[in-house]
Length: 78
Image (cartoon, rainbow, N blue to C red; front, side):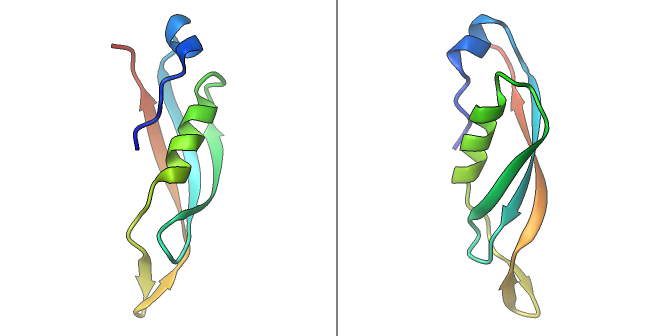
C-alpha cells in the first residue's frame, strides 16, 4: 500500500523522504516501526503505510527469523 499524502502536507507544499526502521517478523509482517528521519507532517502517513506492508520471510538455515530493515518513503508533490 502506498502512503496516503496528508492533505495538510500537500496544501503546505511539504515533500521529502521519511526513513523508517522496521522489524519484520518471522511471518513477514511488520512487528515494529519507528521513524529515523522525520518530516513531522508526513511521519504518521509513512508509518501507517509501512505497518501494512508484508515481506517474504527471511530464512536462516531454513527457519524464518525476524530482521530489521530501513525503509525509505518518498513523498513528492504532483
